[in-house]
Length: 456
Image 1: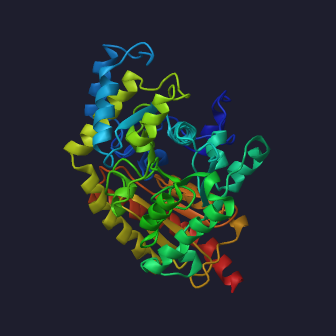
Image 2: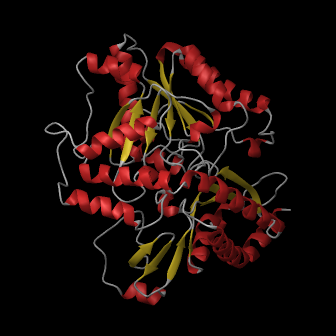
Image 3: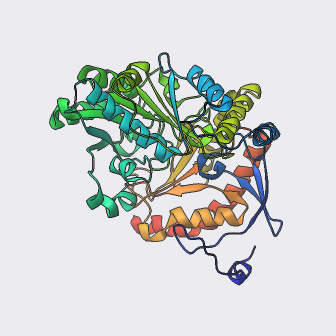
């Protein structure tokens, strides 16, 4: 749809981040979306890394129709429902040993808020009321609610609301590629993990409640894979100081990285997990907070979890989520994400030979990203005023490819792009992604190359 046609539409009563308009969605099937003008787009970011099993999967739609014929709502204080019980059991079976208790929510921010609250109530129930600080990383993103923003290290999103919340302590994210360190060297992992221990000690260990971390980075760090030994060292440090470990699996969970949980790649079991996005795969608002029995039982023994949402355990959402997990299992999509992800990553790395402003390609499975730089040696970013993170997304969109971008350097500068198609992607889809992305990068190249020349 051309810009004049976009502008000719009646003014929308909706508002989100900006006044920008987009074409009207007509239909979505598997990896492709069509607008009302008939243009086809390849969903190269699964929306916001949500549509893990593709769009309009018949098994999920059938499960939702069947549930709609029975009930679409049952309040959790009035009834148990078969879909929520079955989904909770199946979810618990996919978690590390001992993580048997599931609390359903409608999205990632709610999952993180729930994780923070169960952690605090556990501390109170076990005589550790002095613990309330939650350490996170800079940069990081954990949600848009005030509690989640307090642990988010992403200035443009969090800073405006700082007077309204108690901002929590941060440590640097382990961005070895920017710091000139070898991510495959266990000494690098130990270096970054030591920052957590130093912060716990500086804050006073008896005041620190938890450390929250994305096992594989999401939007704020662009599919950052931690250096060797980092996740294991973080687990050991938290255990030693009595600090709860929370894994934010909202983006990297659900099989996208080639394991159901991002943390599974390192065999590290946290105390609490936040899960959403690909868990419901875009079919219904759905997420979960999963906690170890030793966390939940003291809270329930002390009168119950003082927290809840109206739509927690909604039977229609849970029926959709259960069907999503069945599709992932029946079609071997976690293994496919690992296989196709390795191919796509290799193809993205191949683009570095043609485009010198691509400075890094990273990720696992189908949670992948590439970062643009002005200089590969110094890793200096392209000038912020170039707005590469906006420009390249628009050029790709014009080619019929949807990708997802953020500022890399704490939200102020730098440009990375997430390429995360649904887990149903094939070799043919990889070819289409690379062809369209190459066209967009070629259109962007004159601007980037001029900026690189001026930076010399």
